[in-house]
Image 1 (cartoon, rainbow, N blue to C red):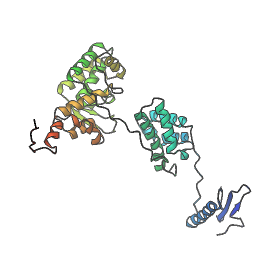
Image 2 (spheres, rainbow, N blue to C red; image 1 turned 120 degrees about the horizontal axis):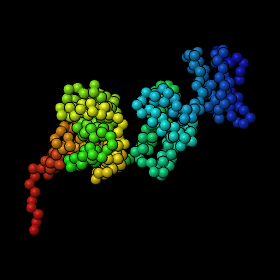
Image 3 (tube, helix red, strand yellow; image 1 turned 60 degrees about the horizontal axis):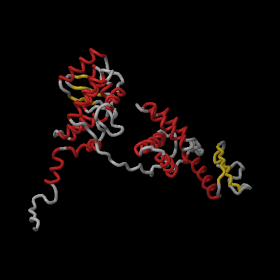
Image 4 (cartoon, rainbow, N blue to C red; image 1 turned 135 degrees about the vertical axis):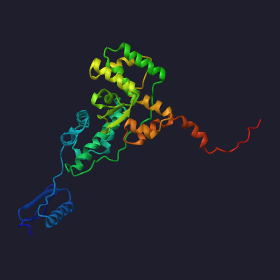
Length: 341
């Protein structure tokens, strides 16, 4: 192994150091670095790696922009996701908002500054956290696929801590009011039945709306297009099954009717929290299930949650929840003296 007469390291007039090395005949590497120490390390690495493998060559520094990584992520992974088109649109907007920097140069400070601008413009903490999660996923997925040779450069930045909101659910009178309004005021026949399915099963609106005849198994409804990608089956009453079949015979399969549902909801006395228009039906099922004495693990399976942590949001509604504070508290079984007069 020789250098074929090349001077391996040479200082340039501007003070930088030029490496020009040929550890193996026909494999020549050139690079300009700021210091002599860096140049010497690069030369040593080239020689050592070439002695281990003749196929080795140093990878050039990745100068691709964030927008390029976003497109690669979509082509290689995002296209297979159910929400991939929506997500890539968000990622493109994020890259543009950040000035489309060189992807490997994005750091926590740049992300934090961009997030601060978003939130000052009215973006919610939840939305900002979602965008951060999507950006991290781009780096992590491309790193796993060996498209980039560096991990996500801003892994240590934490999501915005969100204030937990009380879960809203409908009372029995409100359920009756909503179903009556849907039956009387909507121009579409479908929202009333879709809402009834959501209330009976805890299904998301999209899951109930996508129900088809082949997904009725006896007295159970099968939901296949779920958020967790898992199929789940929820038993219902024979009366509901008969009503669904009669509805389809009369009006045909469900169509996209979430807009009609929202309009009717606005006309009632019910004022759900922002972003919980149709989701309040799912919360209503869960709340009444737990308040009626249902088991939290059973509720997890009915709702199709990936982890029990999601379902535990409803645990405080269990009728025994407050009683346990008395029964299991530190003063249980202790006779306390009467207050002095």
